[in-house]
Length: 273
Image 1 (cartoon, rainbow, N blue to C red):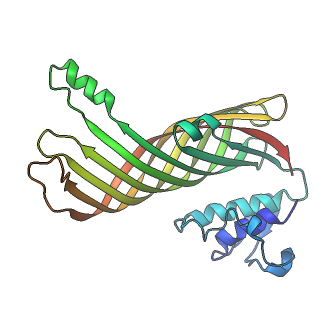
Image 2 (cartoon, rainbow, N blue to C red):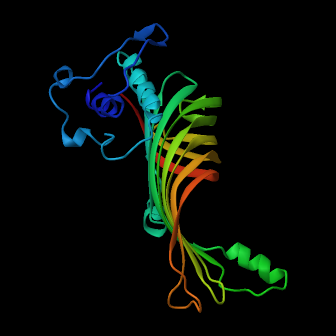
Image 3 (cartoon, rainbow, N blue to C red):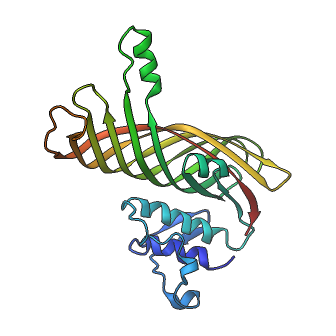
């Protein structure tokens, strides 16, 4: 097992010592990573998970520690790994990119770490259709555009398993989301624009189904929901061009309970370290 994954994960959790974490017969006491132990300072190619590029909420360090211990506990044996990304067509059509790494801990337990960035630009067509059916004015509706960046980690527990990485599982974990969203409500006389720049920390629960095809092709899909706390700021204004009575922008702090439906679809491959 190479040292590079441990170097990258240690950079995320280097401010949090691993204290008496017991995994089977292994006990990892307070340790601190040093470049000398892994052959010098990490190269740029080793730092794809380094936290200096993504500001992760403090509690995410706990998951980094779990990943480090999982690596260490299985270093002497073959470690099952599945690496996957979302399909190519979603990169081009939906401007979305997501990647996951699954690391087997036991036959039924695995750790999954995930990164996703997606942009969106759409109107709430379903709401407009309901208004039309009710006999109301089918106006232009509400328009959303912006982007989300997600960093998450969770524990997969397989409820039924035909083989490694193939079966039905529950996934519970924590996530951090950065939201930059603009909502435009195209009212007839005063189009309302709300710009939201916020962060979200919360828990996520997913039902996951995964398959292994031809021994090495990995396919996984998950659906569930997240619930947590969103904080940041919002700026509310009106469209200066089309509004009959434009008003000055008003910025206010955001602090609220929030939740979203969560889905993912990944295709990749499996191997052993």
